[in-house]
Image 1 (cartoon, helix red, strand yellow):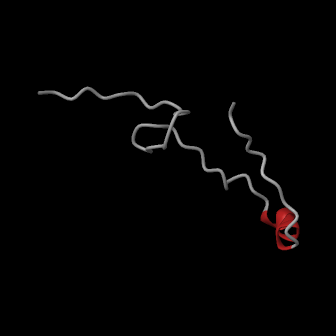
Image 2: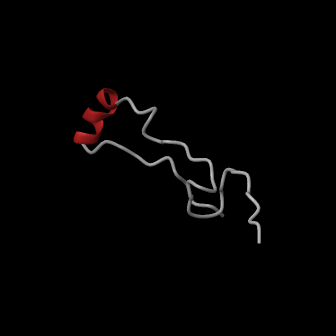
Length: 52
């Protein structure tokens, strides 16, 4: 029996599996020098919002 390969896609509905889904490294674009001071001062917020 031959297994058919599935193309990778961006998953928006659950946990990401690197073999099946495209993955983006969220820390690649972070400038730690710019954000270290606010984090140390506990002056940060989350930009993630709940779905309705």
